[in-house]
Length: 217
Image (cartoon, rainbow, N blue to C red; front, side, top):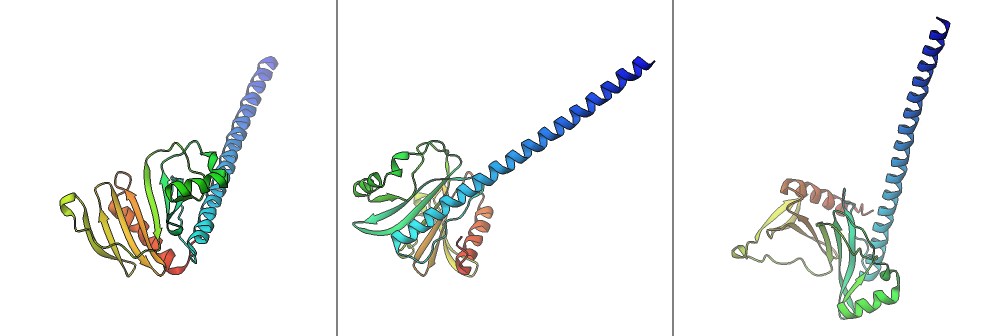
């Protein structure tokens, strides 16, 4: 009987230790996941701040909205020039990215590419990426006119969001929203396969709120 009691006690102790070990492992895994997510967030924020700072400097503007987009990565960000005059910045967000083109860490390469193409990369682009789901453009030019090209599959309308007149355009692949601001205009473009029109109007409304309130960062 004593032997039986000892065996049972050992089994119970083993189960208890195993349970504690499993609990500790789960807690450690959760902690590691939180640290990883925090580091990724910091890195993402750092890239956004770098793009904002360089875009403001290149375009000589007071500020610019470069938003975080949930579950999307920034694949590319560049300023476009007309001759030597910079006039717009584009930021392209993709579902996923993999290999960064590290050649563009070299400022000489960046300047050579600018001379060839009229585009200057603000951060090194990624070579491989998933589908582009969101595209932000800011231009110092006036807001575009309506294309009036329904026969070409493009529908347009002037709508109001947050008490601002907005040009809405559906080109068959993207929902696009154009809004005039003091220093030019923004275009927010959303992939139709990834977003509903209701979703993008809510997102665009938040962007306009940030621009009007000056909450760019």
